[in-house]
Length: 190
Ligand code: FE
Ligand code: FE
Ligand code: ZN
Ligand code: FE
Image (tube, rainbow, N blue to C red; front, side):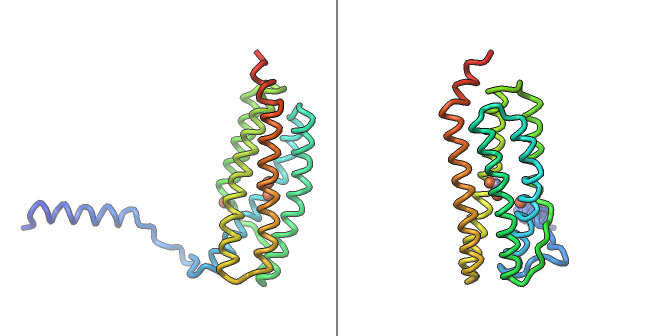
C-alpha cells in the first residue's frame, strides 16, 4: 500500500507523461533538419501572404498605405525567390508546409475588413493586421538567421539577413503611416 505522498508523486509523473508529445516518425533529429522544416513553413507563409496582400491593398484608402502594401507585394515576391535560393544552397527542394500561424493571421486580416467601415478606421485595422504579420515574419527570420549562423550556412545567412531587414523596414513604414495620419483620421471618424 502506497502512502499519500507516494500517490501524489505518481500522479505528478502521470500528468507530465500526459503532456509529453511523442515525436512523429519523421521528426527532426538535428538543427539542420529543424532549419529546413522552418524554411518550408515560412516558404508557405510568404506564398500565402503574396496571395492575400492584393485584397488588403484594394481595401486601403490612404494613398501611402495603399502604396506601401503594393510595394510589399514586390518585396514579398523577391523574398520567395531568396528562399528558393536558400533551399538551393542547402541542396533541398523548395517546398512549402502549411504555416498555421500565417493562415490564422491572414484569416484575422480578412475578419478585420468585415469588422470596419471603409476609410481611416478600416485602414487602421489593416495596419494592425499587417503589423502582426510583419512581427511574425521578423520573429521567424530572426530565428532562421540564428540557425543559419550556428550551422555555418553563411550564404544562406546573408540572404535571410536581407529579408529580415526588409520585414523590419515594412513594419517601420506601417508604424509611420499609422502615426502620421491614419490613427488620427480614424479617431475623427464617427
Ligand atoms: Fe515576407
Ligand atoms: Fe509558421
Ligand atoms: Zn512579409
Ligand atoms: Fe513582410
